[in-house]
Image (cartoon, rainbow, N blue to C red; front, side, top):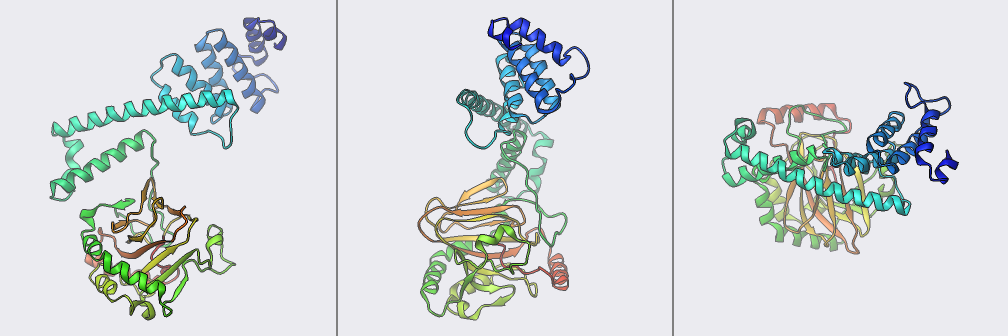
Length: 406
């Protein structure tokens, strides 16, 4: 075959390779399964492509994918063949191929093909997103009950309703197009069924955040004074015994790179710190914080050192949300919950579900400080809150691990 190829007899080489592979039979030839079989089927696909026989080339690629469905080279070749033939599935095929891109540099010819594929896929995604958005908007304008029915359960304010509706439709499109993956609540200990799973909860569900933001200057001033105070009790946020199976926290365990000035810790006031933050404590007293013996409420000033990363993790309990009020945040610090990444902005508070995978990074040369506290999940009734608090307190173990982090 190689001699035929070198002599320019591509048709003869393809026929010889097909005979070796038994391409017309139901089985791959002996000794040509696994990686060896994939390589030979792709070689045949390359020959058929060079002979301008795209359908036969595609058939050979599909035989390679039968042996290795996630083979990067096979997926790239398939996507390229579909793109050249104008097939409607080319955009999705490039998405499947790009998802399997290996780590590290690629050979220059392959890198050029993959870069072109990325551009093709991005353009396809843009067209798909625009088309899906137009379809949804038209359905809403027409009063389509299936598309707009959920709006009835949203807040009365048209502004809040429209913003929330737009966010959900946008995420729906992104999930369809695989621009985002779907994340779920995965608490380590306490999962209460039926609660809304959402990375960042909307402002209409957390109206008291406005009061926290109004106190920004006072809270920040108390934090700065406390950081400089000799009486402040600053401690590492992560403190676990070395015997515990928590490898992801090993770099931060008992490290000052991620420290906390606790005001409330597992339901107990830290007097040395709280006494120096009276205005902050006053604001906290009016918030819907859980009161669970040995677990909540929690509130702290979280200090993240320069060039420090907090690894992906989840919290213990989905019956609460964790709230951030950024106090001192250099530009470039970011925070990811599930599929959504934000940069903290000083004075702009938010509430998130810490039982959805989240992580953070301070890539700057300066300290990052955030005020963190927990609140009840807004989906719980008063009677449910009481029952949850009693149940968690009775369960005891692992119930109180701070405000969930970051």
